[in-house]
Image (cartoon, rainbow, N blue to C red):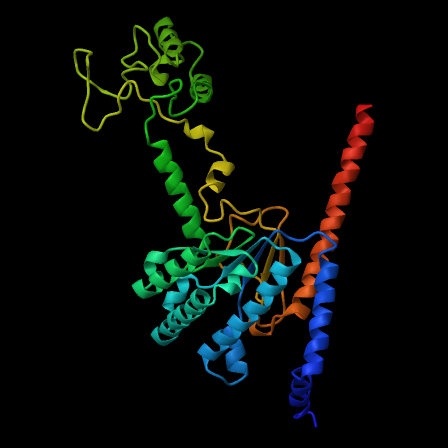
Length: 372
């Protein structure tokens, strides 16, 4: 009896009356969820396809195919509840180390699913979702890149929601790419605005004085007058800051040029021109780095879910996870993940969200009372 019960249950659930009833229950639950706060950006680590295939004695690629069906169900729940951005960890750069058979099968599956998206554009138009493929696309075969470009172009006019597909991706690569872009921007000269140095003058002065004072403490108190004069002279930051002075070999206009022995500045083809200014690296902030990330135009990450019970991020969204991001590790494999597994996660997130909003409101009210 126990062997036949799962089959009987699946047969009953797939019958038209049961499907009609479950459909209405889903609509009621989604409607109830929409009455509360909804995460605007949700990310998924779709883990467990291979283990599901192994435990059910099916081919690995069939497990990945079932995982895609689970994804379709979850996207329907997310977009119908009001989630604006969904980010998926579809393929890591590290996955290229898997067997050639599995990697090749995943590439073929990616082309198949992208073809389905291209041929049935209503799947994305239904939610108004725009596809963005994040990662090192140049590592993919050219035919896969062509399929990606077609799918991205098909949905580029949709603006209600976003589907980020990380393929192939690692967070370290994303952060490295962002830093590289910032460095490139700060190496470009600009003829606008006031001159800007590589570092702030106050910062350099403090460092010079601090280092020199530490040295002076170690020197004997009976040093001669000439040594004291040298010490006083070394405290003058003009020699280090490039400010004009009689004893300085550099000035703000010649620091960036080659100086000849007779004191005249010679310009090399690769030297910075005296009228060009460069951004101050001390002005680099986390916001500027954030603007160079793949997800720069997306809202902050509210919720990250990983299936299979594995409790690690696996180099995914390391920059985007912040102090208010809720990270949930679900004890089920990705092909098994559906509304009934996702519902408790959303309800718990809503509870924490309401609690945080109430805490912030109490703090603001208390601050207003103290101000009175």
